[in-house]
Length: 330
Image: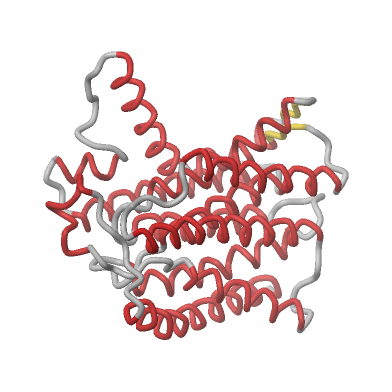
């Protein structure tokens, strides 16, 4: 029951601090005219969103870091190398996203870091993660606990981990296109990852990692208070890259990489749709979808934004529950 009480405390503190952070941050961003520029391809439906404050990721990043520091300082949770690695990835990807958001705002358009620059930054952070992760004494093995499978991947393991980290951060970034979409799906994913971490055995600091997940759940819930339709603020790359990186690092450290594919199913589908569309345009010159990512395809079909978000949340919740069942219960 103690871990459950800690989880509730973590969510509560994260939620309260994120609400307070939002109430302080949004007026400051509005005053400084720190807002997004809507893509020319979405001017028809998203025209009213032009100028909506961005960098909203700070609303859940700052409370999460304050809460985890408070709990560590009061010895409610314990220091561990694995927890440190996750916090490092969370902060590092958040800083990379902030740089991208800052350049977009400074230039007053949708052009921040180039794709190559962003990918290079993501790879550098992923390489540091891999170095720190392997220094903990972990073997280059892929575990599928449910099926009782253990695969020694040798040198390919490093490439596999780099791919998961970079793909995850990009996938959340791609999904962040409608009010509340990426935030709600991330909340669901971190709730599932928290439950899985809580039940992971033989790995240092898993209960403290679970608490980190639950803090983020509370903070994201507070963020959604401002981010659901009509959004008063958007998370920007500051938030989406941080969330994607943290998700992947937790899945890797708890040895649930395969389970993560299920939990992050909506993010993965959104990314695959973009890849399929690009490949189709390159090789046949034809579009398969009206617009990518997938949520914009449904917009072009005439769906209301709120209906798309709710539908995606439901799918995300079903996949997250399936992931927990696959990774923990079966």
